[in-house]
Length: 268
View 1 (tube, helix red, strand yellow):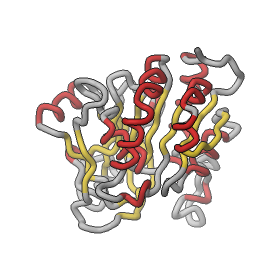
View 2: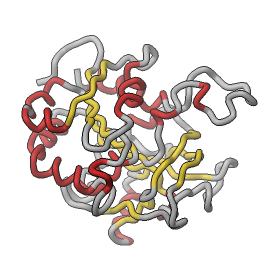
View 3: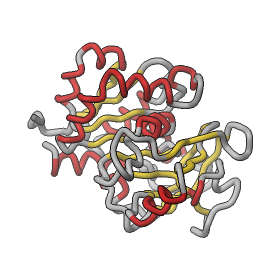
């Protein structure tokens, strides 16, 4: 049962190489967003999983959980599956929201919570090594799919956000899975060129199939993306902030505002 409070509560996971937790919590806590975010070590959540009931949004931030040993996000996904599967299932049954950013996205995909085209907890895709064969640290354009119903991407047309990853190439498990993603409008955002046209390298920084940069599950409430919206919440974070006239608010803020607004209207 959700706790009725003024600001939706956000749990931001931390620990074992996750390193974007403070930026993610900051984004949710911005006055213009209206969340009430706190960080919690995954070990503390495993010790008392009932803590999850007191939150409305769960965020898996970027970083290099468990050193990206074996494959990016897989150890974190395994720990979540075998220690927190039921609390996470209840969290989703209660209509709450989950966002995974970069390494968090990798974990949600390997956990089977994204894109979950057939059923939850079954891996339908992977995020593998970039086609460039190197770590990509650059800014990219995203074209938001207007037909995607995920609350995270409402009222957004295009975004300019940074990526920083070595394993960001999204590959569906089969052509049938890709077709389901397209037909069910689960592709939330695609990499694009600055003019909005289909991307090629470096605008698609990793070679993702169909330029996929972000997906959601069929409910729209589980959302993941490789770019970092928490890394562009203020004008001065833009790479050309000294040379261009920019709004004070960065383009990543709307994703967090959308989540908080949805939680306030539908979960609390």
